Amino acid sequence: MPTDESPITPAPRPGIAERLAQLVRLPTVSAELETRGLEPFEGVEALIRRLYPLAHEHLEFEKITDFGLLYRWAGAQPGSRGATEPAVLMAHYDVVPVDESDPWTYPPFAGTIADGIVWGRGTLDDKGELVLILDAVENLLASGFTPERDVYLSFGGNEETFGDAARTIAATLKERGLRPWLVLDEGGAVTDAPLPFIPLVTAVVGVAEKGALTVRLDARGEPGHASAPPRETATTRLALAVRRINRRGFRPHFPRAARSMFRVFRENTTGRPRAIVSALLAVPPLTARVFARLAGDAGAMVRTTVAVTMLDGGTAANVLPSQAAATLNIRIAVGETVASSVARIRHLVRGLDITVTVLEGDDPSPESSTENAQFALIRDAVGVAYPEAVTAPYVQMSATDGRHFHRFSPATYRFAPLMMTGAQRASIHGVDEHVSIDSLERGERFYNSLLRSLPA
Image 1 (cartoon, helix red, strand yellow):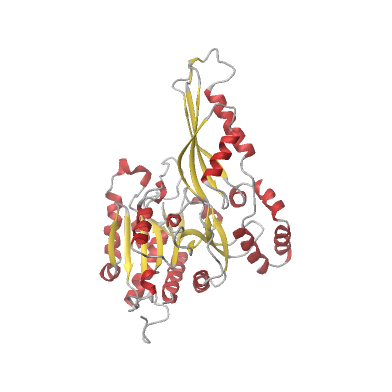
Image 2: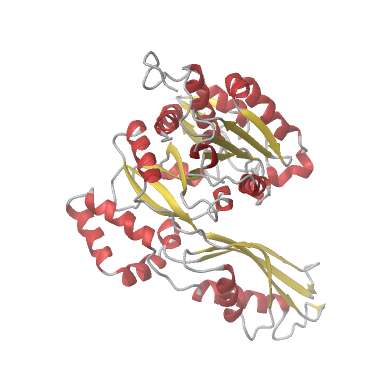
C-alpha cells in the first residue's frame, strides 16, 4: 500500500524508449511462426524478466500455452472481493508481417530511436502498451506500493493470428472463479482529431468491439482452353459475387456508443463543429446513411464492413480455371451476429452458384457502461496523463484479445494511452510505425494513476 513517504506519482525510470526498442528488435511475427520459429517469442519472456526484475520478484508468473504470459500481482487485502474480482491489464507482443519492399524510414525491426521517437513494427501495436504496463508496475513496486485489489497482467503472443493464448487465459481465470472487475486491452487512443470536423483532443475508449468473421467464397467451372471461353466462368461468377457484396453490403445504423461519443463532442465544442454534431445527432438514421458512404473509420463506425483480402484461382495464363476463391474479412457491427452476417452474404450471392464457407467468427461484444466506477477510473487516469484531452466512448473497429473476456466480465474496455496522429494510425499494420517518447512517458503515467486508484 502507499505510505506517507511514497510519492503520489513515482518518477518514471529513464530508458523507457530503449526498453521498447529492445522488444521491437525481436521479430515476433506470429503469421511467420513456421519460418521464424519460437526463438523470438521465447526471447520476449527472457527480456521482460531482465528488464523488469521487481515484477518477476513480486508477481506470480504463469505460462499459458506457448504464447500466453500471465502475471498476478496480489492485492493488499487477500481473501477480499478484490481477489475474486481483479483488474486485468492486457497487451500482445506479436506483430504483423512486413513487406520488405515497403519504404520504411528505418528498418522495421531495428528499434531505432531518433529525434524523440521510437521507430519499428509493434511500437504502437502493441509492444508499446506492454512496456507502459510493465514500466508502471515496476515503478510502483520500487515505491513500495501494493494495489488494493489483485491485478493480472495478460500478455498474448498470437493475437494477430487469432490465436488461443488470450482465449485460454480468459478461460483459465473463469474456471478459477474469477470475474474481473475491470479488463483493459488495446483499442482506442488519444487523438487530436477523432473526426475531420472535430478539432478536439480526445481519448477514445472502446466500450464495445465489432465482431470478426472470415468467409470464403468458392466458385467452380469447367476447365478448358482460354481461347474459346464460355459466357460464364468460375472467375466471372466470383467477380460478380464480390461486386454485389461491395455494392449492396450491409444496412447502416448509428450505434449507441457512437451517439454517446457525439454527445461528448457536442458538450466540448463550439461554433461550426458543435453545429455539425448537433445536426448529426438530430437525425441518426440519416447520419448513418451519410457515414456509410464514407471510407475509413467514419464508414466502419455505422455498418458491417467487408474487405476482400485474398483471391485465388487459375493455374496458367491460357487455361480456364476450374475453381476460384475469394476470402472476405468481415467486421460485424454491434447489434448483428455471425449468423445474420453469413445469411446476408448468402442472400447477396444467391443465384450465382457460389459456396459460402465460414472459416472463423466471433460475435460483436456487449457494450460496457460509461456510467460506472470503471469508466470513471479510466477517465480520471486520462486526466492525469493527458489533461488537455476529453474522454469519449466509441466502438472498436478491429478485434482485440479483450473479446475473450467480455462474455463474463461486463466492464471490458479497449484503450491504449498513446497519442496517435492520423499518420501514426495509418502506420499500424502499415509503413513507418512509430511512437514518441513523450507519449510513452504519458502512457506510463496513465497506468500508474489507474493502478494507484483501484478501489478495494
